[in-house]
Image (cartoon, rainbow, N blue to C red; front, side, top):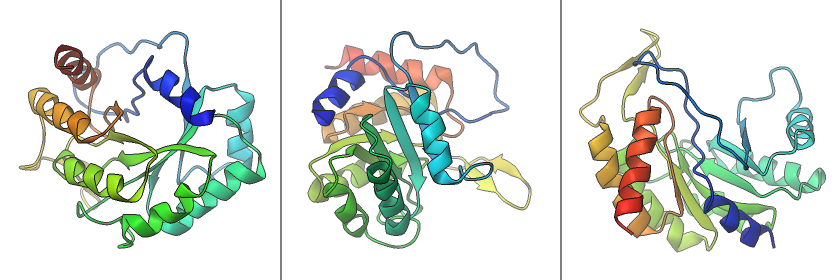
Length: 216
C-alpha cells in the first residue's frame, strides 16, 4: 500500500532539494497539491531526531525524505525511527557517494541497503548530492541489491572547498544541457524520480522535466 501510494505521488510531482546558491536567483513556486519534507542527517541541532520527525509528521506532509545518509548505521537509525514512531507516510532514504562505488563511509551499498530492504516503512531508496557523472553506475549498483523504487538528485558537480569556504569549479561540472542528457540515461537505467541537489537551480529542474517529457 505504501509503495503504491508512493508511485502515485511521484507521478504527480518532482521533488527537489535546492540549497542556497550565489548564481542568478529565480522565483520559486510552491507546487500545488502535494508536499514533501526532508530530514537531513544533521537535523538534530534543536531537537532530537525523534523530535524533528514528530514536528514534520504533525505538519501533514505527503512524503518524508531522509537524505545524504553516509553509512549503514545512519540508515538503520532512520528505519528504527520510522518504526518506533509508527510513521505511515511514504518515506525515502538517500545516500551520498564520494567515489561512485560506495557510501561515504566506505561501506558497500549492499551493506547499507540490507536494513532498508527489510522495512516496509521505506518506499524508495536513492542517491543525492553525489557528482552527476557517478549516478548512472550507482543506479545500476542499487538495482542489483534492492527492488525498491530508485530516486536520484545529484549536485552540480562543483566541489566544496572547506578551507576557502566556497564552491569551486570542476571539470565534472554539468550545465543544464548536460543534465538533460544525464537525466535520460538515469531514467533508462531505472530511476523513477529525478531532480537536483546542491548548486543546481530551478532552471536545471525545468531542463530535466522538459527532456523527460519529450523523450518518453
